[in-house]
Length: 293
Length: 340
Image (tube, each protein chain N blue to C red):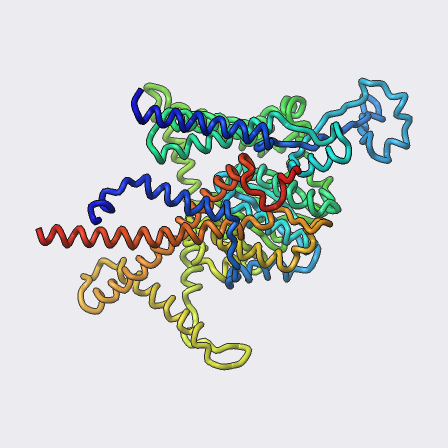
C-alpha cells in the first residue's frame, strides 16, 4: 500500500484534479455564499455614494486572469450602472481595453441600453506609462487622456467637463492582475491624497496577501480572488438583480460566474487538503521505515 | 505500430468523430452575430465636411436623395449574440439576415478550444501539439507587444511630437499639429536616449547604452523610493499604531474580538521584526520571540499558497467552462444555447 502511494504517477493526481473541477461544472453545483466584511465594505463604498457620482473603473488585467477577475469587473460595472454613477473606464494594461469593451457590451449595452456614451460612461482606453500615468492624472487628467478610445477629444465629451485631475472623481474601482495595478494606485494616488481619493479593488489570489497590509486605511474594500468576487456578486445581485432580469425571468450567465466558479473551488480544495495530508502521511511513514532499516 | 500509439490513435479518431457529430448535429461551437449597418452622409462641403447619421432624424433636415454616392460612407459592425437569440429570430422570420452564423468566430472558438487542449496535453507528457501551441503563443505575444509598443508609445508619444503634421495627416487626425515646444524637446531627448540604448547591439560601442540605462534606473529609483517610503513604510508604521483595548463606540463596552485582533496584529509584527533582527543571537527571550515570528510567517505563506491555489483553480474552471459551455454545449446554465 505504502509503495503504491509512494510511486503513484503524478498524472493520476492531475486526473483527480480535472474531475474535481469538471464534475461540479457539469453538475452545475453551487453553494450558498455568505459575504464577509471586506466584500461588504467594498459594496458599501460604492453603494453609499449618491447617484451620479464619478467612479473611475481601472481594468488593469488581461484574458489570462479573466477567470478570477472577470466576475468582479462585471459586478463593479453592474453596481455602478444600477446606482446611476457615471463611469470612467481606463486601463494601464494594453489588453485592458478589450476587457472594458467586453464589460460595456455585456452589461451596459445589454442590460442598461438607456445609458448614453459620453454622458453616463466613457472609455478612455489604454495609456502606456504604468505608474507614470497615475502620477500624471493625479495632477492633470486631460494631459494623460486628451481623447477617449475613439479619438474624441475629452473637451467634446460632456461627462469629462470639470474633470481636472483624479481628485475630481469620487472613487476608484480597480481590477488588478499585477503590475501596474492596485499597489501602484495606492502608492501614487491614494497614499499622497488620503482624504481626497478613495479606492476599492479586486485582485488575483496571488496578489491578495500583498494587499492586506493596506486595509483599511489605504484600501477600504478588497475583493480577493474568486471568493471575493462571488461574495460581492451575491451582494450586488441580491440588491440589484431585479434590474437585469429579462421579461421571461432569464438572467445573463455573466451575473452568476463568480458563484458558479465556487462549486469547483470547494471540491478542488477538499481534494487539495486530502492530497496534502496524504503526502505528509506518506512522507512520515517513509521516514520511519528508513529509520528502522 | 506500438500499443500506446495504437490506443491514442483510436482515442483521437473516436474523439474526432464525436466532436464532428456534436458540431454538425447540435451546432455545438457555432457562433452567431448581430449585423448592424452604419451609414453616414456628408451634408457639408469638401472643405468643411459635416457627417450626419443616415439612420437618425437629423437626416430629415437634408435632401439625402440628391446627395451623390461619393459623399456617403457605410460599414457593417457585428456583435456576438447567443445561439438562442439566433434561433428566436429564425423562428420569427425564417431566412432573416440581421442575426447570422459567423464562420470566422466559430473557427476562432474551435481554435481556442484546440489550443486549450494542446496546452493541457503537457500534463500527460511533452508532445508536438503542446510544442506547436507554445510556439504560436510566444510568436503571437511577441508580435502583439511590438504592435502595442508601436501604436501606443511610438506613434502617439514620440512621432506625434516630432513629426505632428505627418501623424495627423495619416493615422491620428485628432491630435494637435503644433505640440508645445517642451513636449517636442522631451520627445527628442527620449529618441536620443532610445537610440543610445540600441548601441548595446554594437560590437564595440556597447558601453554607450549604459548612459540611458543609468538614466532609466535613476529615474525609476527616485520615483519608486518616495512611493514605497510613503505607502509601505511610513503608512504601515502608522497603520500599526492601534489601540489594544478597543471600546465599541456604539455601546461604549469592551470589544473583546477587536481587541484580540489588534493584539494579534501587534504581536505578529513585533515577532516577525525580531526574527529578521540578526544583530542579536536568537537565544533566550529573543530566540523564543523569533520562533513565534516564524510561526506567523509560516501561516502567512500558507495563506498565500491557499490564495494561489484558489486563483489557479479559478483559471482552470474558466477554461473548462469554456470547453463545456461555449465549445461542446454540454452545459447551458444561462439558457444561451437553447435552440429547440
